[in-house]
Every structure is written in C-alpha cells, then in structure tokens.
Amino acid sequence: MPLSDLPPEARPREKLLARGPQALADAELLALLLRTGLPGQPVLQLAQALLDRFGGWAGLLSASVTDLAQVKGLGPAKRAEITAVLEITRRSLAQRLAERPAMSDVATVKSYLRLHLGALPHEVFAVLFLDAQLRLIALETLFRGTLTQATVHPREIVKRALELGAAACVLAHNHPSGVAEPSRADELLTRRLAEALALVDVRVVDHLVVGASEVVSLAERGLM
Image 1 (cartoon, one colour):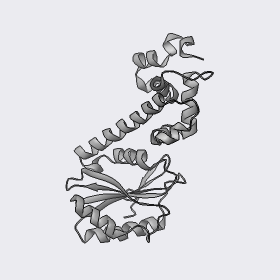
Image 2: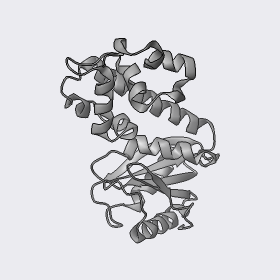
Image 3: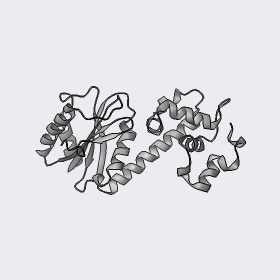
Image 4: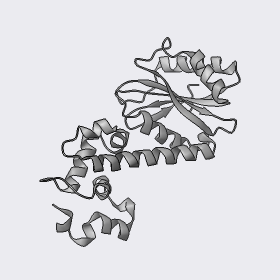
C-alpha cells in the first residue's frame, strides 16, 4: 500500500526517527531514498523489487548506471540517487583506509572490495597498493577475463607498485560464480606474486577472494 495509507508509526521515516535506522527493513531504507513509487507500484514494493532484482544491497550498490537504466520506470533522478549513494559509500571507505592501516580494519577492506568487485559478471584481478604504514594509496584493476597464472603478469604489478611508491599490497580477485572459495591455483598465484614483489621490497599482506556475499582472506585461512 502507499506510505500515506500506513499508520504513522509504521512509515519508514517516522519509524527511523523514533527507533533508529537499525529498526528498518532493507526495503524500508531504500524506500526512504526513492521517496516515491511508480504508477501501480508503491514505493515499498518498488524498493523490494529492486533489492530482489540485484540480489540485495551488495548487488544494488554495485550496479552501474547502465544496469539501473534497464529497470522499467526507474527514471534518471532515482538512478542518480542510487548511484550517488554508491559513490559516497566508496569514497567513505577509501578515506577510512587511507587514514589508518588497512589491515587493522579487515572488515572495511572486505566491504570496499565487495562494492568494487562483488557484482561484476567477469573475473578481474585488482591490487590495493599500500604505503609503509599499510594505508591505502590506490586500488587498481590490472587484469580482466579468465584469470590464470599465465594471464596475471607479475612484472605489471611490480612496475605499478614502484610507480606508486608502494611498500606493501593486498591482492584481490572476484569469483563471478558468487562463491568466494580460494582454489589451489589462487594459492600458487599468491606465492608467485609474493616472490616477485619481494625482490623490490614490496610485501604481499593478503589475497582476498570476493564473492557475491562473502570475501575470503587467504591470510586468515593460513594459505600464505
């Protein structure tokens, strides 16, 4: 039903102000952002439909402007609002990682990578380049496609690390299948890259595998 037909205490805005944002369901939070629905589709129904279509918040916040344009009835204003929230979230996480040692807040690193890589339909290999205090210098996607040890070139990573003056790095890649389970090939690639980067005094502190709803750390698994 339209929000105006709900009892005041059940409307998302009033509920948030009275009980805090944690009291709202995902669809209610998104409805606050969207504000209005579509003809024949109240805003709460539209919000739930968007979350269902993109697989929840992670998928929605990773959606591109082009992806959102495919949603019938979702106009430029609403697409811009959703995209702006994604960019605000990315910048907030990047600022946090630039201000403190990245690996002291692994949960933020994982969230940051999920936003960048979690919903991609193709496999990519990215590197978080860190300074001597393990603060974020840059996240760069260096390779794309079906990744193997042959397609991820150590020299390109070494070259970029030297250009950025990095002292350490975190390797990352996604699994488009959605299952963030490291493979034996992932372990071997990690060791190969760690050996190459060690030659220029750049330390590999972790390798993160990004899935749809989970990010797995090889360091936490004792695999590196």
